[in-house]
Image: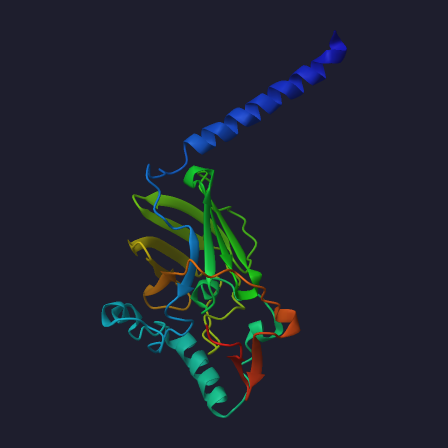
Length: 261
């Protein structure tokens, strides 16, 4: 009889773990009864640049989202960024990490001009962002988990998620400080925290309000918006950065050389 005790104990442990997982799932933030129609492929209407209006912006009511919103750098970071700008003006390389196929990190992966696909599964408790840019995938789980206390910095960081009515809210921390906001050399610190608020404006227009808080680099939170147009006829295609099929360094600046959609 004693030989069966370990098996019984393991069965009890397995049941306890399963019950714990079910409890965590039940305790997850509210999922709306009628999920918003986020699923599909979306075109970024604003592109990556945050300091100018894009030529591809749609009607004026949408352009309001893309007025100049420079990063609110403190004196130290502003001085460093001015050095980068002055260097670029002299024709010197900005040394954009993505030029050598290093991942762009957040928020740059959601600012780039390439399309993305959103997939919602598990009854709204799992949201997956599939980016054509560098074939990046971001997975967001709504299981009640918090940010780890001892977090190893990464390109996409650690994200927690919850629904506020029809708005999907992502909170991301633990981002590497050696990535840039854009190919213009805009930097951040390892204290960067990003909140994304995704909501539908209408059936085919999706908004992401992005609030970036960086106590080491900013004097105040930096808020910007991105709009995405649904493109039902599009598909996500290969982006093989290692074969240099999309970008090249021209006169010290990383430029997109692929055909415009």
